[in-house]
Image (cartoon, rainbow, N blue to C red):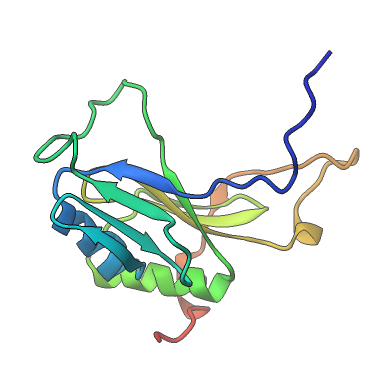
Length: 165
């Protein structure tokens, strides 16, 4: 017998990352992506959010100051996924990334979402994405999801970009 499913209101609240250089990490998450610093603990830690939440991202150097990323072939975080509320706002994120000279690792249309893949300065994987409305998600004839991976038209995404605020 399967255990009961988790309550549908449960959400992933935040990600907390070990970083080698707090200022370098802030330059990415604050200055490129646009998250706001909600609290700072000197040169060792900072907490960032969107929309006034206490924090969506924690950054610290407590165990990692000056450290290096884990080598390929080891376990750990694959990526942090940051959900944007609309395609135009994802387009704005793409513009910010390009303006900062950051190279994408990839970009994909998954049917349910459109996603950009890149790395932060500590080589942590980052996914920036938006979800299509559930009524537009591709489904098999039995109603189950039929997600896929196809190339994402970056030009179209940039054209949809919300104006900078």
